[in-house]
Length: 521
Image 1 (tube, one colour):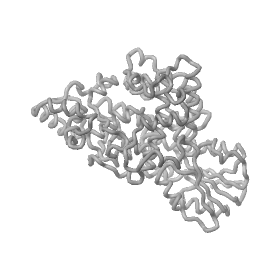
Image 2 (cartoon, rainbow, N blue to C red; image 1 turned 90 degrees about the vertical axis):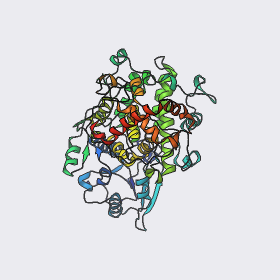
Image 3 (cartoon, rainbow, N blue to C red; image 1 turned 30 degrees about the horizontal axis):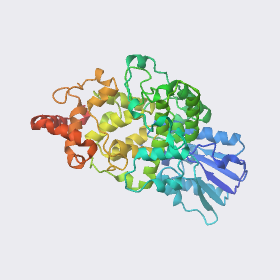
Image 4 (cartoon, rainbow, N blue to C red; image 1 turned 180 degrees about the vertical axis):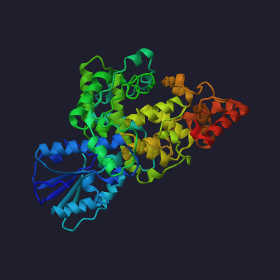
């Protein structure tokens, strides 16, 4: 264990691995009586099986953060897995440090995960040590205002929330009206990548962060993990790198972000990154603040003709709308939300989610991207892997564990409502008014996956028929009592009825054959 310069401190301040905000007011004043602590913990490496790059990114970023605080003159104690191996939990570590350094106050920032929030709330310290929780100063909607916008168990629609946030923050507004007279440019942001557009995709900006020591430490402590191991980590781990990635996004990706934000391709080395910002890890670790990200983008938008309103609105929507909305859903519905399974899905996750070895081209690409980079862009997560899990009735607990473990940006507050709510509709409609289900037609419309697939996207039945087609209708048929009254789905059920009993029977039999052996797809 590293030894700080002093043997006693008045205050011990804990900084969790996703609280790496150097702009927090804590750090505005240097006080030699305050000790800041960052710690790698087995508690955090083992609650799901994480991607190797995810663990490396958080551990490397924590060390960079601790070093940055130290350079500013703060008293800092950074502990790695070797140092914390003897402690069973975060509780044990904190109690030990409070006693060791004779502190009279233990402070921490409000955790973004319910699990950690409860753990620290219930932490019992000696009577001489006071406990204090402060805001992370990261989100655009303060924690204590969430209850004003969200009701437990009740549907809250993102569009209304997003418009309120635009007005509140005065972002892309002309007074009280949206800039350009429109709130939403979704209809212009659904383009498929042409061959010419694919050839112009920017190569992603990748970093070369040596994480050899972290990998050795993970091996030494026998931390089970998944995904490709890279001794040179390509993700940003400090503010300098994160700001460089932000600038790269603005210069090379934002001009086309909105247009192609839902597009997919298998025909480019950049198929995993496309025009996406890949800032989600830096944001969720709080290396970057959402307001500075939005302000940087809008500043360039206002000065440059290369970025039009549809592009900037599509990105702003993700940051001040969707990200803040998902957090609100999470906190107003936990802990019950993590057990919701309204569609009673109970099938096991197929083996190829851990290998990418499947004949379905769209699934192969999306899963292998995830395994290779600890990342897949949002439409792969929602409309490929998420859609597949929805249609096949995979148990939400298994899907949650996979998403939470494999993605570098996955923390429960953002993963759970996106997966259990948006992708699986397991929350019964709290997040979305209807399930985000789609057949092969959607995948063909938005990607080139189908042209090189083992299966035929034009077929619903017979040998080689695209599994998404029959599985889609099987899903709709088995849940028709729940959904046919939904006004957004009436046309769909009308189409199903017009197919006739013979066609319906053939489609359902095709799907049931697939469902009996998902591992063979």
